[in-house]
Image (cartoon, rainbow, N blue to C red):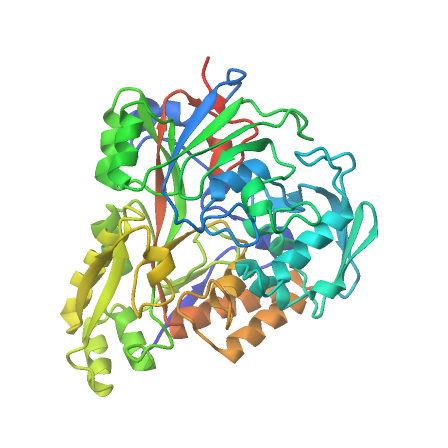
Length: 531
C-alpha cells in the first residue's frame, strides 16, 4: 500500500462531548448566506439572500422540488425523498441546533445511567397531533418500534438496531420513555436526530404515508406521490403558529425547468438540488431572484461497489484514489465553490475532523493496476442530472484518471431512476449527501457493514469494532481519538471516495425572509415573505 498520512486537527485535544457533535450542517457555526462570488460587493448585492427579521404574517411559499417516484411516502421511517414535507409535518424527540448540539424538540430533557446503557427521555406536556390527539410516551415507543420493524425497511433501523432492540423501548409513564441499550453508547441521543425519527401517532403506520399526521408547524392538506402538494399552518403548534399560512410543493423533474420557474416568478425557492455555478450567476443577475450560499453543505461521493468484480481488488481501489487530485477536481467541476475532501467523509468544519494529506500519484496508480493485471482498466461511471454538479464531477474525474490509464465511460441516466435503479447497485457512480449528520451517525450509517446507506457495501469488522469502542467510551478525548482512527481507516482502506464538499447554492426569491433558519433541516417556523 502506498504511504498515506493524516495530520490531526489542531483543535482536537480536550474537546467536550458537545464539541464532538459540532457542525451538523457544514459551515453552520459561521453560516453565511450571500451572493455567488466572494467579494464584498457581491455579498452586498446579494443581501436579500440573508434577509432576516419579521416577515409578513401569512402568505404562501411556493417550493419547487424534484419529482420522486410513485413510491414516495410521508412515512418518516421509510421516506427517502419527501424531506420538505417531513420538516413541515413532524417533530423528533431531539434535534440539532446550528452548532450541531443535540437539543430538545418533543423531549424536554434526557439523561443516562453511568454506563450509558439506559437513556431516559421526558416529553413536553400538552403537545397535540394534527388530529387533536395528545402526544404521549406510547406514541414515541410505537414510532421507534416501527422504525426497527424489519418489514418497514427504514434506513435508520441499521443505525438503531446495533444499540437497541424494539422490546427494550418502554413507556414509564405518559411522558417518560426509557431506552435500554444492548451496548453502551455515549452518543445515543444523536442517533435520534435523523429525519427518519420523526414521531407519528400510535397505530398510524398503515396510513401515515398518506395522512402525514404529526405534531409539526404545518398540517397536510394534499399530497400526491411524485406530484404536487400543500400544507397549511398548524394553529395549535406548541412553539406558536408559523409565519406562513401555507406552502405549495411543486414537483418539477427537470433542473432547468425548476430554475426557469424561479426566474419567471412562479416559485419562491428551489429545494433539494444544488445550482451549478453558471446557473447560480444567472439567478443572481436576474431581477427579483438571488442566491443563498451554505458553505460545504453538499458532500459529494464516488463509491466503488465493494462486492463488484471490478472493485473487489484493494489495489484497484487504491489506484482509483491515487489517480485524482481533489483540489484540481474541485476547481474544474465546481469552480472552487467548496472544499477538497481527500476521501475523508467528515466535513472540514466539524470538531474532530482529520486533515487527510494523501498522495496524488497517477504513476503509482498505473503501477498498482499493472500489478493487479488491470493495465487497461475500463469501467462505466454513472451520473445524472438529479443534482447539477454530479455530471461535472464525473466528467472531471474521468478526465483526471485517464492519465493513469483508467478509461471511464460516462453514463448519464434519468434522474427519476438514479436513486432507485442505480444507487448501491452499479459498480461506480457519483452521489451526494447533505452534511447534516453528527459524526457518530455519519460513520455508522454510511460505513458500517450492512448499513442501509452504505453506498459502497464495504464490510470491515475492525472498523465496526472501532465504532463500537468509540460509542462505549465515556471519555471525550479518547472517544474522539477513536473517531479519528475511523476516519483514517476510511481514507486508507474504504472503497469510497470523497472528492469534495460543495457549497450549496440555492435559488430563492428576493422576497423570502429568514431563509437562514429554513436552511437548517427545513425549519419552517419563521420563514416567510416580505410584506
